Image 1: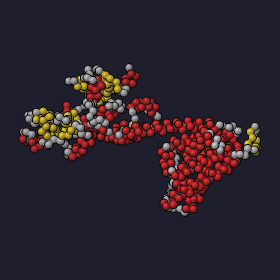
Image 2 (image 1 turned 120 degrees about the vertical axis):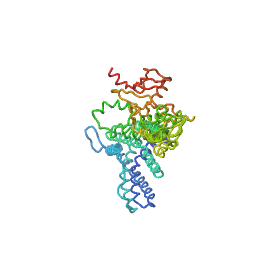
Image 3 (image 1 turned 60 degrees about the vertical axis):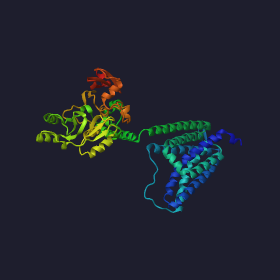
Length: 524
């Protein structure tokens, strides 16, 4: 009864049960592999027989080794050290544990796993049981030696073996799943084996290490591992709140070699002269990013805005209409009556020219019914509509029916692959020097982020998948940050870049000079 009240007994028992279970996982896996060679109706019986034999063998080995460690009479001496049968058993057992734990840790770190190979073949029950007996003899040694090194009482060793094997017998599948899902737990227990093996070797040379020290180290390690598992679970929960599409996009971009701009800057000096070239160029990563983020973007971020729409007034002079069509490099035009919001339809440029040349006026039969979609429509929905429109444009209107822009197949392509300026347009982002750009105020933030290799411009609103963001362009971002229309020369810093307003036209930010601050400071 006094032994039952000793806390060291209970600590040793619980610790030994955990270690015995972990050390028996390999045995359990190999028994499952061997049992898989039997017909399905014999497999469960083989597992029960195999684990039962393992328990009996461990109890027998425990009894034998526990008796042998009582042989304390010196057998021979080496200098000032004398060795008994107990010392030799502890030395051999400790070295075995050090070797076994080192090999297992090496396989875990290298990522090697035990797997069954070859074709499935049904064997006889007796042959499988014979193989299980041989495996039990091999896999029981480390568990038995660990028990001898952990506690001194034979009853505690046997109780730990019986309890651990019973747990494995009734919960083999959940245990296997747990070990596979938590590889760090196995690595931790193998580290305990190293510590126990070292203590056995020390005792073999006559240096006794109190068991309390081992228990304290194991307990502290278990507490740290518990905190580690809790942190992993909380991280997984936090990741689960991120939309699956966004997580998939980030994972694909990481596989392609994409990384934040600041990380690229920090590693630039190291990777410019050495290291392998990335498997994917920046343009390729940008295109993949454009495809994966397309569904998260608002239609405002891809459409041609109202101010840039080229349209035809059906009531204008035919010569003026012909002149406008000829100087504008577009295939389709919205046809309106007096103002842009009075939509009559959409017409092809060649039909308009043909009508004016042949009849001197625009023929109503050449005007197609307009396709108007609400501003809240997603990009993918608009893209599906464009597929069915046979090359026609889609007009975008707000909740009040006011035309806000239009979308063409080229706009969708630019959202994926970058800008394709028309003949009458200049690139919205022009590099003016090392680390310097002149950017049009209407530049799409997604495209600008790809050019600057930064992820900070869409840190709110549009960037978080909010389709109702108040801005989708650089001008909109600066207006939101300044809180008012800025004056020429006003600047602000965002993620290592300085954005300075270069030109303002009628309360609209027309051009912005962007400078990478680090390079600007180095030059100055």
